[in-house]
Figure (cartoon, helix red, strand yellow):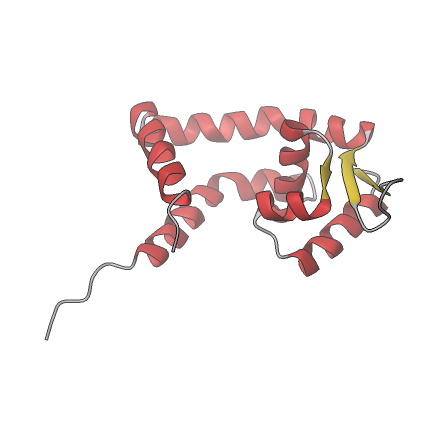
Length: 140
């Protein structure tokens, strides 16, 4: 009987959980979920996006994205609007409060990254990110 191969997907999930252990306390302190923070961060980096593009980049299923955006809109973090040319297209952007939320979180998040770098090393992290980006680009 062959020896089972180490599970890539399980190893990725476990690594994600280890990394998120550094960030969850900051998210909790600011009353944000992981999904909400991903949306805020992507919008800060990318600017306004169509909701389906945002869902793809944030790795959030479109039905779940609707709820995430509804809560962020209710809290004044994002705003949504329909395209004047095509009412089916919905755009999302950060409000001033959303921009400030990102700024407020940045110091904590940078501190968390520094703690990871201290334990893991900058070269290893750079290599890991390169490998993960390469893995994202393979097609089934």
